[in-house]
Amino acid sequence: MTYYLLYVDCCLQCFDAVGWAAGRQFVLYMVVVVVVVVVVYACVQDYDEMVSLIEDMDAVPNLRVTNTVGIQNLYAFALNRRNASGDRDKALVVIHKVSLS
Image (tube, rainbow, N blue to C red; front, side, top):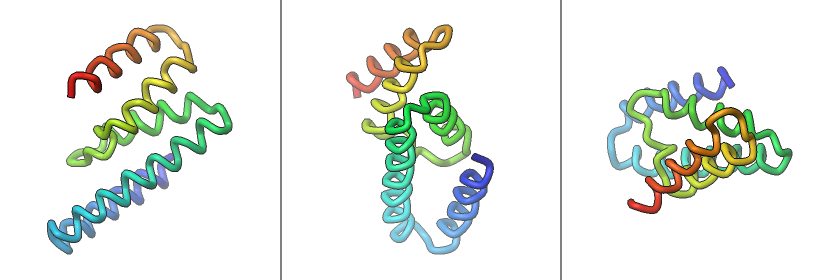
């Protein structure tokens, strides 16, 4: 997990260096990478890691990759399946927020 966040930080520094035009394409690639990793976690039913990855990505400043509808839906799915204390209520809040956007 830590290596992934270091990779994201390095990529954000590159984004600052290359400018906004290349940065938009970079953000698209980041969304694809995050979706693929989350889907792989779903395939092996590792819902804790799905939730951890998305919450860790939310903690990275100036990175809004996890605000996409697809990732938010996968996040709600993982919360629902993990079923820890308060997860299902949080999943409902996430899905409700996505449906309003």
